[in-house]
Amino acid sequence: MTDERKTDRDDDGLESFFEAARRMEPTPSDALMARVLADALAAQPVAAPRALPRPGAWAQLREALGGWPALGGLATAGVMGLAFGIAAPAGLADLATAVLGQSTDTYLVDLMPELDFDIAMDLSEG
Image (cartoon, rainbow, N blue to C red; front, side, top):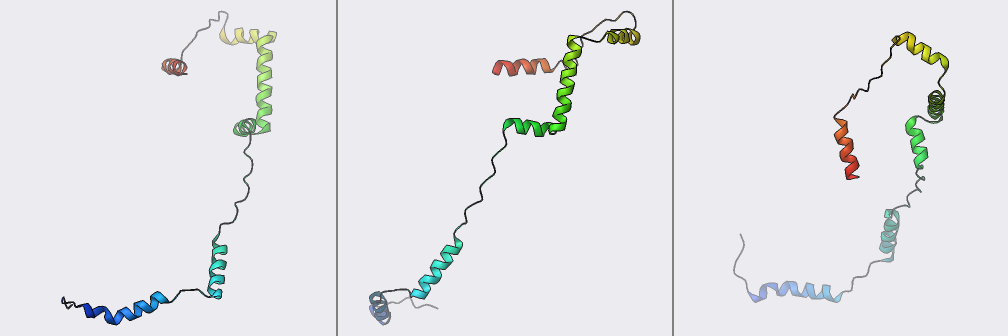
């Protein structure tokens, strides 16, 4: 248990030790300072390696489509579609008549009517 009664002389025995500690100037040894400095240098972060430059927009698009072979096929299909649109081969009309019959009617079918509203809203917010 602790004694709650305290007198002024209770700390006199310790006061001489405290006074000696106040008078002593703490100076670390050279060996300690060298070890602290070596530890500090070892703990410093190393410079990060230089990041590779980010590919441009065209390079990203090319890779997203599958590289050069896929772009070659896409370009070929685009050119052939343009050629068929400008000057359709004569046999193509005969093939359509043979497959679809003599009277061919063209109908416009909206397969996704719910997207019209979404597209209109996107354009108006634009």
